[in-house]
Length: 483
Image (cartoon, rainbow, N blue to C red):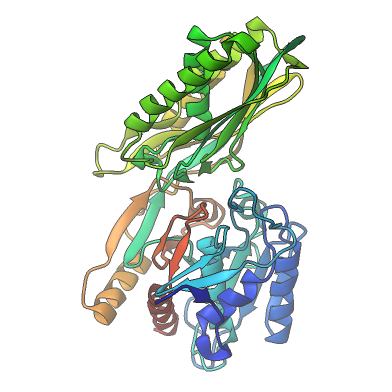
């Protein structure tokens, strides 16, 4: 089937609602429009609605006749999305609707992230609440803001209106998997002061691109290249044989996305032009060989101007500090879980890198299912910054979601999956963060499970959502709600 524009008719159920919300800009920290849309939806469907000052939304549908005595069920998703786009694309996530496309069974957005994480969860909630024939207990729909940037919405939510002790989170990416535990994390805000001096030379733009990137929790174990770290390594190796002045460096845009591209601005002496270009080509081959399997598209471009210019570049001491930091900063998988095969226990991801006038700023997301290991990693990073004359503070901590030994909800969902599809659901834990841990800390004795349809490439422009899987998972959720 050829690629075509996607349009869902009104009777398309969950996909109709997914298309609806895809027309509303919803970047993290820019959720007012989608939040207002959800509040209007609640009013149109005669639901109790609470919209807090953060723009979190709680919608309550009272129990159907005959189900008043059944325990309430909390349905939970987040309204924001990671906003990544292809280089040079004329698209503004604060203004433009997503351009939905269909390729066979898969939905994607032209040139951008799709927002299936977690637009499909929101769409499932809307489809349930809009179903007048649904026979259900009291449903408490909770749709949060800023999940992608540190779960600020979940942290700031007043849960006192909620009566439920069961929570079904709709923010997972694998059909047939019941997610029951996740890692905790924190955001490292790293600052390294720098000094500049007047210098001159041929301007060079050095760009490392073509990496696959991905979600820093779900795909960190794939050992994909981090563009910020690799560009730092490239500069470190270049500096061994070539003199240059660093005037700028940047890479990444989201702390929880593995950076796919990074760029440095340099000045070199005119007589070293050919030698510098040759060294870059040689080092490109080294990195391409190392990342042949994980990032086959890795490439380095080196654009050298013909005319010398003057600029403020880093002093020798500051350049040494910057290169040392990018070489030594821990990144990627730090420890694997010894009890669950293939599960990452501790990791960190350098997600954002930018050189400003007087300081280098880095944002790194740390994750671990063991709080003491996360603290130890924070101490390592903090000590490295201190030794280099910088500083580190760690914000937006969120707790690990611990495995619940006895879970009636997990048992019921597993039995229903076997009944509907004739096979066992897989019980799982992940390294990525899920809001369930925050809600478990806020609501005593909460029983939580996270599910979702098949998705791939989340947090990247390669994000894909399975249409058939979305429909199956929605049917599964609806049956559970009605059971």
